[in-house]
Amino acid sequence: MSTIKFKVGRDAKNGRFITIEKARQRKSTAIVETIKVNKKK
Image (cartoon, rainbow, N blue to C red):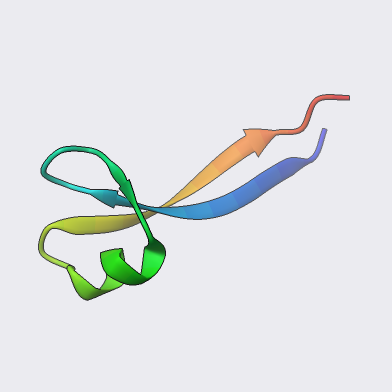
């Protein structure tokens, strides 16, 4: 199986998804995560 990887931004205070650009600007309160999803056949 192949794995699909993509990056998302997440607010560290409330856990909501935000854009990657905003997460990189707010380094103290946000994080950029890499999510791996197994591709089903």
